[in-house]
Length: 159
Image (cartoon, rainbow, N blue to C red; front, side, top):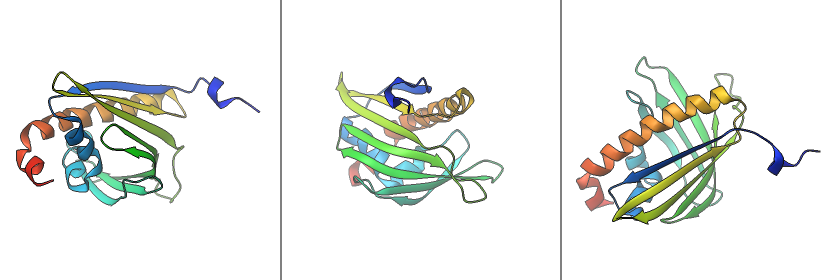
């Protein structure tokens, strides 16, 4: 039996700073209408199916590529500590109904110079190429999140 703490599976770590308070950045991750506005790589559309942001709650969404190809992803919330921490599982659904190897996403939010520093960690990748693909997709999503947080003042007033 191997020690899971001793494995060398790749981990993705991205740190971003947003000019918005922690509660707003946290809500962008947990409000289905907000999440649909920014989640996914450039050119993709995000359509939420389920978002139950509480421990044990499920999430499921479809990322629709510019060519119309659908990419379904889902998982379960493990920890939800507003507005400072989210932990959830993440697995892609295949066309045959199976799922990809499950990863764990841990996001922390901390106040930083009037804004928020977000540290995003995703662990448990089956391969380095899977990590690289996720790094590209999440990086583009976070660019979209930054734009969303800076331009969606109507959302901030009605959340």
